[in-house]
Length: 375
Image 1 (cartoon, rainbow, N blue to C red):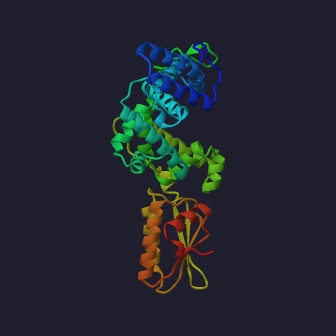
Image 2 (spheres, rainbow, N blue to C red):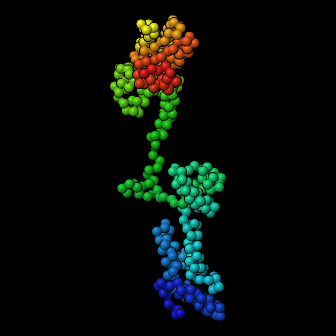
Image 3 (cartoon, rainbow, N blue to C red):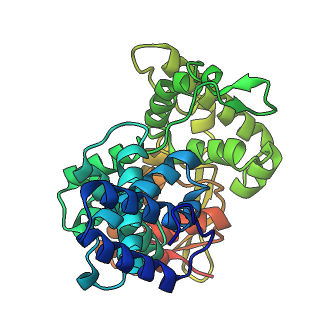
């Protein structure tokens, strides 16, 4: 083959033929002749190496660097080739691809990471994608460790080193190109200043009575008007406004002070609004009507009045609680009704409740008072 012959696209058979002829001629010549034969053979095979390098032209590595690595692999393949090993083309492709992959592994990371962690990062990333497809969510470190048969610490280290694979320049343009990435760092996070207040508020909300907490939830999370809240709870809009204002004042005082202020609860006027009226019916039943809301501020008054009514009733005489005019019932009121039920059961008196408003009925059913309820 002439010394200056450089085919642009040598077929596979030609490459094998060139390699075999080079190996045969090299065996019986001096060192100078052998070096010249090697250079001519490499020059003839350069298009193959460049063609393999073009597969990675869209990688982050410069194209010229990848091409030089591929040509270096070709040089190694030519120098180490022995005809008895088989096809030169298959051998050369394996050597060249191996050199390029080694180059990407050693130089493709923005931050130098030990080879062991690089390999672990690849294993963990593949396992993460498999688990996402199976679980339909991001897996935990323990789940990744179990899938990869690794310690959770190794999984965390592999995930951390994965961040060093590709680095971004702080001068990278963002938005419309008038600003840089570095200018977005270091700004004050306004949400961080609210973390302490939100944690404090969450603890205070747990201390509110059920009615006040429900009103706050409907007003600020449900975006309901006071009139809509009043209709749902069965109370007046004025009462909703009063309860909302009292609750917000208490929360504000608690947020601004180091000590928890006492919960003032219902005013004396509101507590006294609870009324219990008992009268016998012609059919022998004792009819008891309850007027007003029942909460922890006046639940004891309801319990005392109903227990006294049950104590005066004849043994075996049914007692009907008319709760049509009771728009609110909380946990303290439920406890009062449970105490009345047990006291009536001890005297052989059946107590039923009728006329419950929807909200009160839901509370009573959840609390286990279903047997008291009548259609």
